[in-house]
Image (cartoon, rainbow, N blue to C red; front, side, top):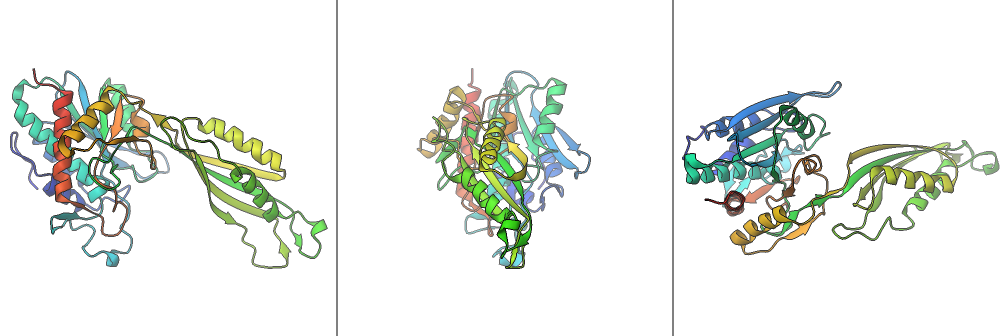
Length: 390
């Protein structure tokens, strides 16, 4: 797809299809961000591609594009990296063909979230064409290739780079697929935190006929996990669901029925609301496990703390734009998994709104063309509301 000239309309479906044809499975880019940069440069954006790599990790390409250099800076944020397609033979249409068929765009990333990124660009193109050279504000796109992966070399590092340059964001919309069933269902104004716990319990191996000479690690770990799951973590808060602890695996690796295991392991995940921090959860876990008794070690991986942008002027503006286009008043929600909004919320007011997420990460991921048209209209309306004409 050739980069459009200024004042030419930009077709979001065609752009999304081109992005889908770049099989950018995390952390590979495969030309997705350079193609997007060429399109945005054709609209007058200044584009900077930045590659980051922590020691021991694969490098990740990221993009920051900005139109204008003064006034308030409205940022669209998202990611061009996608999850693997799985068994390609299970797909009715090739996952990286970027095919439009029966009024639907098919392919990995159509919903999550190359479709929304294309709508960002198309909405900005229309807005800038209408405002002309008199537009005094700034519009930016902050796009990473590391959202579906470990999220080390992506948005967080790009934000650090922007801060070091003195670049300021005044408001940000993340284009994650927030809608459950129909366009206009839901805006995300926060997310729960996520923490994995890796529990190893030590016992003493022995013969099942002589349990007094052993210490059964299986029994120990069952008691410890019961202590963690017997009562709810909380009852929820004003804007969040109750926190949950879910055991994912219990691994003993004992192939003999007459051997008492000396070691047992378990992995669990906690999705926590704003009543908790990862630090307070670690203290709670230690107290519970210590009370259960036994020798153990517990390691953690925290992918994000809970955060909330309380309902206010920006979320009201987003909701207004959605209602004007769809006729629906969206729910302001904090449900779902983590997103890169967990990094951006420290810099400016933020909300998340994109396409319908029914097929994201699934075989035959797809979005109706009509939904992309509506999303482009919503993003365009939001820009009009954020930058009222004088």
